[in-house]
Amino acid sequence: MRDRIYQWLQFKRYNWKNYDYSLVIVVFFLTLISSYILSLVQENRFSLTRQIASIIMGLFVIAFFSLVDYHDLCLYIPLLYLVTTIMAAATKLSPLGTDLSTDSYRWLDFKVITFQPSEVCKIIVILSLAAFFNRAMEKGIQSYKNFFLACLIAAVPTFFILIQSDLSSSIVIIAVLIIMLACSGIGYKIIGSIAAIVVPIVVGVIWYSMQSKTHGIFRGYQWERIDAWLHPEGHELGLMYQQNNSILSIASGKLYGKLLEGTDDVRNYNTVSVRDSDFIWTPISEEFGFVGCLLILILLSVIIIKSFRAAKSAKDYMGMMIAVGIGAMLTFQTFFNIGVTTSLLPNTGLPLPFLSNGLSSLLSNMMTIGILLNIGIQPNRGSNAGLDFR
View 1 (spheres, one colour):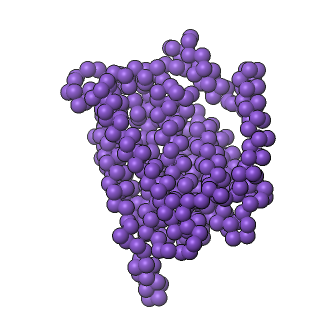
View 2 (view 1 turned 30 degrees about the vertical axis):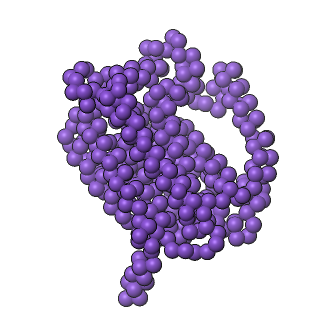
View 3 (view 1 turned 60 degrees about the vertical axis):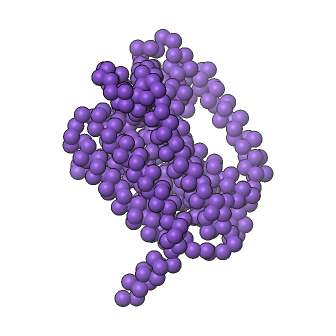
């Protein structure tokens, strides 16, 4: 009985007038667009049914995590961090790991469903870093020790994601780490002095790997994709075939798209593989054209902007750090996905938030929305609130 009363009081103390229903509506519209596009590219009625079921499940995930206090959630971070890291390692080091015929062991096969741990790992790393910075802030955050401990927190799961051959997710986690470090208040003197040493070393290693053609830090196929991107001539029918066809498909959408113009032309995106996930921007562009793509980009931008606004108006430091991490993650994933489909970046696999096919990606993104909503309805907790770039 006491527990029920406590839970009720928890809900009553939330500032419900700040519940951002518009954020849920934007996410819902994006998932509807995703379901429609996936029904076109997969040509499978069962796939559409499954996608709609995933959306309903995702809305329940949003509702659940919007009601769970992120402070309570962070109490279980050590356990969640350990479990997700073990799951990330298991994709490569256990019989449950599977590559789904992609040569990249990114999934766990539970027979009934397949699960991609790296999607959840990104969120758990954000929560882990936010909880760590919050604890460090109480004792004085500006120290080299805290800097390296934060890097270590991100590095452990990133290592296991990297050996899956999932370079893109690893880069996203590193990018999120950098943004969260910059906003943590750890001090630009510490960040700047370490960056002055690390950045030239990283640039030198990458340059040496590319010049020596020994692949260095890159796997063979990763180096080949980068080399093809830098020197596309001669790779039109090879490694650049997919990205070249993606560009042609995007261009064929023109201003309003083939769907809105009512044309029965052959769809060029049928020549592009993984068009339901990593290259979903290709059929979106061909069907909806420039105007449709612009509207979808606006919807994605609204979510990202709302993430950083949630950071600015957060009632405490930890909420601010979580929102910053979520905003950074969504920003980089959107940029990398669209950058690959338009050949601005080398070919690498990364889902487009709320649009790409995949239950792991969708539910993970829904989880982030729920956490953002919970940050927004928190009551006042003290003076250390809001976005701080100390």
